[in-house]
Image (cartoon, rainbow, N blue to C red; front, side, top):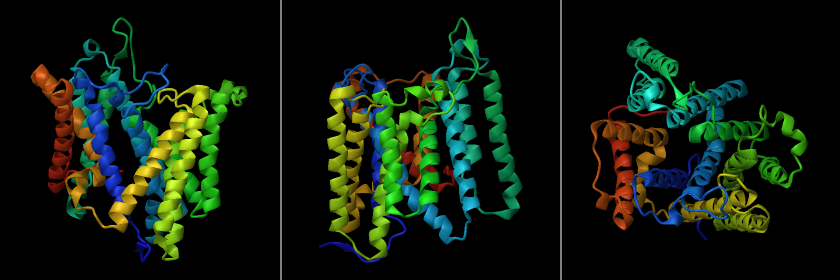
Length: 401
């Protein structure tokens, strides 16, 4: 029997899970640049009863967000932070993710000919502003005014970009809209809801599982038509993704809370592993059980998608927990480490990359972007982004919210 002998404030498997998921996220986000991509790698269409690899990555990341919440809040409490301070931190993090998400999703809808600067210049300035605002600056009192000034400059750049923004239809361009909040915005809302649930419930397993089931069943009830009487308020107040997004995140919270329960008794061993596997089986059974009614669809956020992807996340975390935390086999992930510890930085760098090469007119020949060669190219691109993230971290550039 493999056993962790003392409570752990940080599981290496969580960081490695996050790093590998970010590697996959960058990889699938680069598939747009390729030709002849296998269908099983891409997003499935809304009308299809199907799911590709691209449809699994984001739920996995939301699950990891949930895995981190109990450790992050417990760490703040150990440093003496009050509930009020922790709540304010949750609000600040949510605001940052929503703000970045709104800008990024509006970038996707920008009208190139409608703005006074190129869409790609706008994109570069947006990411620069993010780095100025949320970079981790050194704890140097003498330079605090400088760092504060850089943050203010970042916000001023965002205001300027918002002022000149034009999006939508070229014939009738519009200003910025929330649209669907973007990936970061969805993470923000899910984090906000689940962090508040954990802050209120703490490590009480029954309440945490109840919170998880609430979001899962809310999603199910929406598809079953039980919530139709709430349609008048749906456009104003609703749970993000019809409950699907926080359901993934709360699944991660459940996994961490159970770990913390075992760790307090110095009994974190293969029993915990079996619990993770059992939860994965239950989720898969729920997913495949609801598939005949509404199919599997990420775009529609169906109950089957929620169940199946949650099951995959539980199984993936169980494997990494066994491999990394119990067996101590983790050196293989060293090259991915920056993606697990500087995830936001890693996520944003490709936006600068794509904008710069477009402005410079740089592109790879078609044979390097087609078929298996193209997939290798995208995998190497993902790895390159992670390496660059590690390098700029060493010179003091790292985002944290």
